[in-house]
Length: 362
Image 1 (tube, rainbow, N blue to C red):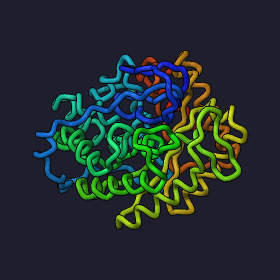
Image 2 (image 1 turned 45 degrees about the horizontal axis):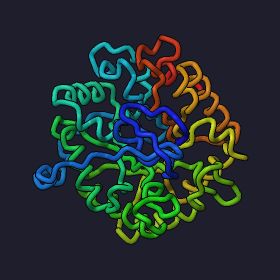
Image 3 (image 1 turned 60 degrees about the vertical axis):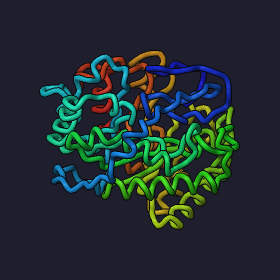
């Protein structure tokens, strides 16, 4: 979320009330309260003109079934051994068998060379793991969904050119990045934000046929009917945002496939009935026929150490279940400094060790 916190890789701390999760996707940054988000770099215009819509006609790798609960994982980029995850013999074989989707931050993909990308594709195909990309959709620095579709398709091109298929795209906080009440330079109404995000969805589904597209929002900064927002920001009732988005998608002749909530452990603990609020949103999303997922992690643990991140992430899974929650998608994700290591899965408090224990809890 956003706080006074540590953000990884390149993070700029400044004052201002921009939505917490405004741009953690590229280079793994989560915008903190009272912090200016790091801007996503734009793709060069000559690249934009040269990349046609992608035809995913290459033979699909066999993937795990998607008819039940899915496990998504997204290790923190600053884990000391992140690049070793995709090497032959990397020690996460048990986690591989349980994982459905490996999620990448869009700017990180753009920085990988072709050989590395081919290793990624081979490793995940062999494990029957789908590729997901956390993108933007609408940003506070680029308010046009149409332009963002061009920029972000160009950023995905290296992976596609390396033989990979992108099965899932997740827009990170398109409303928190563009609403007037979120202090965005876009100064959009809910309806304007919804239209731009829906345009992005329509265009990206045209560029990458068969891709499923979903949406993350930083839930603590919204109310949800009787449930209050976390102290600090109030972007309005998330149910109104939801309804406006569904209407805009219908007008564009397209749809989204899932909704994931971004709400680290302590925010649910400090917000009255925070876990019950997530359960209410689960029911609301399913009322629209969408899959519902929760990103489980810990802000304090991500800033202070592996063990706390591990403990509070698992506690979050248990507390959501105690509130009646049963997510379709369980997302274990860090955009913090910790866990310091991704591997091996047998070493206490590494990222993959956490995933191993989390899949048992979920």
